[in-house]
Length: 375
Image (cartoon, rainbow, N blue to C red; front, side):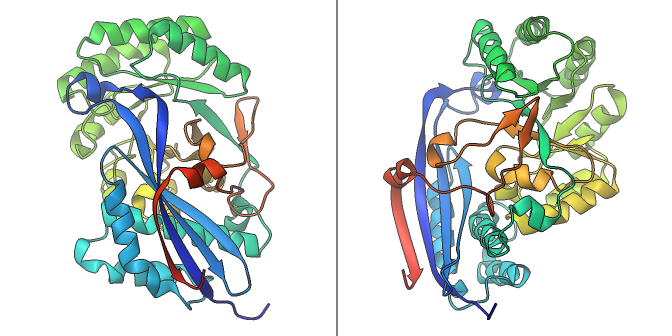
């Protein structure tokens, strides 16, 4: 096939309203307000040969408009470039915004473009993205999170857990980290008794414990045979997470809030978790995420990427060790397609690229857009 070049880049700011205001421990400790929407940055890239790729990043609560603004500042430099040179373009975009650094909001803005380039490349090859990257498996273990938030009563969490299991989702994660530790234990005990000992169960404290409480709660939670305890401490408390990892029998999982490869490398080098939870839109896209996989595998860590299952299913399938993917149904209205779950696993779609297309609803929820090149 002759050389191709990028003809146009379209950026869209999309606001996804949530059906129910969502609360985790950060709300109950007074640090955040309930979440009512998620802001998405979509990037759509089209080449002169008519090949099209789509990618997205996101921000919960603050940050969405800023991601969109930064992406608008740098997107035009892609016009006329060879879309296959993703690594080179990734570096070019970083240098275009070098004064705002290589982590945080700027990195997340670039992620939407990077994901779109990988989607486009896989479509050119007529392969699912996982196959293009080099998959180890055609399905990945999956667990449900969206039914286990603290705004739901224990009875509601039980009902949603049963529904998830019936839908072929393998594990259940519930939120903890309430000011009343005994209420956390009551909810964990209730859901463990409801789903039985054979269903994998995880808990997520969303960074709301201090070191002493995390250690005490970790010991109390041992009896429930959890797959992991997630974010028991502040995301940047590497030393504290390392102590818990060494001390507790239950594996420690963290990493979702980190926004660069360098931050994750500190986590990995410090042996501060058993299960690493990177988020491709937060660390800069697929290019950076794949670098992380190599580092994590070298240290023998397990993998459970955070959120964005439409992207992470493909990436987790490429990890040598058996990973987990988080099932969130929040994003369903944004796409025309659905991911399938069966026997506790999420199946790699056979559609080229990510296998997703933006829905009419996503277009309707678009609050701003910008086009560079020839639309």
